[in-house]
Image (tube, rainbow, N blue to C red; front, top):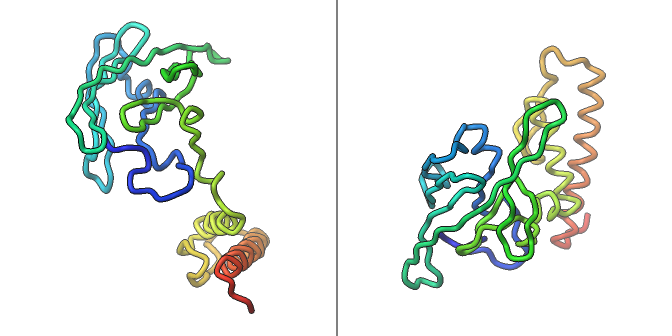
Length: 198
């Protein structure tokens, strides 16, 4: 298994750059039955890039995988991760991982892997992508959200389209004004980043 942010240069990693395993997904797919064994894969462009085997035991899952560091020999690891549950407001219960990192023990839904260790995002100091965005990046992302709603091609440099069929003119005009303001903020930030003056 490759390391967190392999090939990345500088800056702190974001959660979407890491391989992860989500207990909510395992539960939703009915995989958390004691005695069950199944493979878990990570893919990129439809091709498997890494995998582990998961065995469900009473109160925990056992993650079995091989890893190597710095091109060394492959090592096998059986990595136990304990589970806990909390009651839901309207009945039922929610399953959580207990972060296995030393001195953590947080109740989390997602564990991330770096080198050979699974741990929560707090232990790895991972941020969500939106937390690493500049103001101009955030403006561009919000403008793209509006473009999707209007059925336009994503990207503030793409031409604008027409009003979607069935949308009220007042709504369209409000969204278009908001889009134009966001696109302007994003372009101003990009120009400032590259030292371009108008």
